[in-house]
Length: 84
Image (cartoon, rainbow, N blue to C red; front, side, top):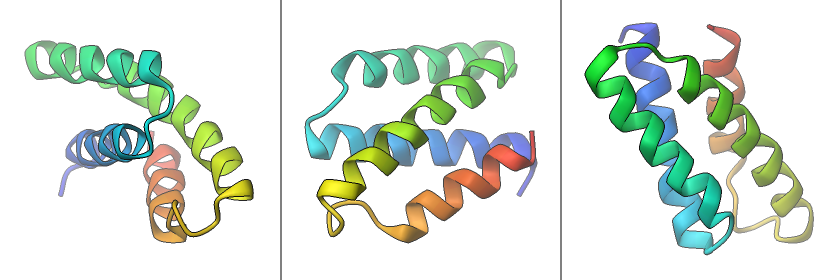
């Protein structure tokens, strides 16, 4: 899988997780916008930026709700962001 396909896949997972948790509606909207933008211009910069923000949000949420955010998701996000 190409690096840019990975950031798109992880961004979708992050968006879905934030929606499921019912947190950060503004960030969900921003990720949706970036996904749409990426689909048209194939520039992943916004996806990397917003997924990085979401990573911190999810890590903080996991501290008080450890069972609601998987370690695998956090690891996948971190690994994908390193490929930038």
